Image (cartoon, rainbow, N blue to C red; front, side, top):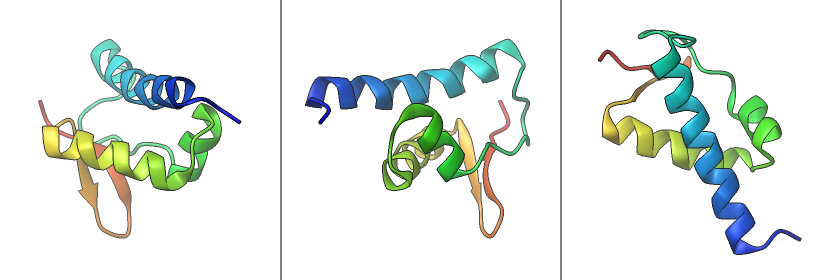
Length: 76
């Protein structure tokens, strides 16, 4: 079982990977992010945890939530 520190590091890695993809141009404003399930699998996190982190990025203006679609990159 993962320690709290390892869990926090995986959560931070998810957030940082999204931020880095945006900075590098890999993700552009309006681009759809992978599904919660895909991101969770990639970062070894539950989809609930992924959703929480993506909502946090939404509150920061980095992402937008589009009902019935998913999360998209916000406009800079």
